[in-house]
Length: 341
Ligand code: TLP
Image 1 (spheres, protein in one colour):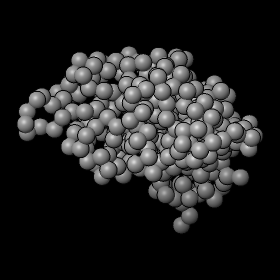
Image 2 (tube, protein in one colour):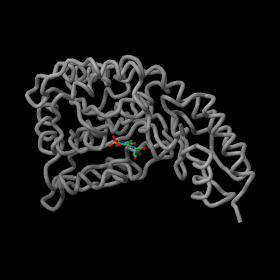
Image 3 (cartoon, helix red, strand yellow):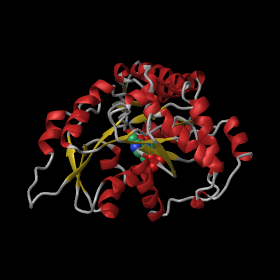
Image 4 (cartoon, helix red, strand yellow):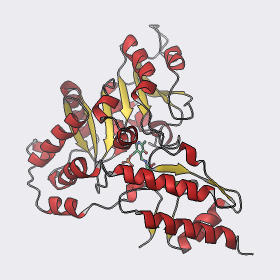
């Protein structure tokens, strides 16, 4: 099998997940009577210190439902210009929620400057949209997978609180952020009103994300999940994997982080490749190729059984230290062979 470093979304469910899925007690979640989904929703909320949780099919759907629930048509949402909601969610909030995203430059680690955020909050004026939501992302995918600390997020959280505006965290990889810093995930997101996190990335579930927040928020979000066709039926089969993810897969993320650092240091030592290993904090690394066109590099790596992104590699469950060493040998061989004439 190929060594697949394109994303952590490619991770396969663990044997324990497959067993739990096969024996899951299910109901019909549309009628609210799937006990395994209910258990996962309670567990997710507890892990992140919120009142309630909602199981959804993807991170994109989780962020979309959160935005729909927080906003009204014509509202404005402040978010970082490099964040996934702005760059890679098909403008769902505009298309389906009819809200406008207003962007702030991200710092090198993905943080937002609280002064810039404050300056964008709309005062009361008949001409202006209402600022309805502020979004942060943690870990920050495009900013080297940086794990933002609670202190780094606190100034923006304070601005949001002062202005009475809710704060949403796209925490697709919030457990990576917590593990990287050795903090409890609930502490990390204590100042957020809502969080979306993915079960299907580093936590290795086949499908699924969670939204967590207040009981009232989740009750309203449930209606938007229904609206976008996201209510599932015997979804306990999927939730069973989510429960294993929260019980068994969080601690091991440290292994992925160590593997990403090993990979980054190795890449940095290969002539024609550049990678700043010093900024790698979690399971994502960015690299560049100067010795040949990037597509030639990815194609040659693929020919050697290693799948990589054009400028990014991601470690995850199923990738071992020896896979990293194999990927590095492939990269060394590709770069020393050069581009075929
Ligand atoms: N990220 C994926 C996709 O862009 C393909 C990746 O490979 O990194 N928030 C963040 C920060 C994300 O990185 C992603 C997915 C999502 C939300 C959306 O999650 P899904 O893919 O479950 O819709």
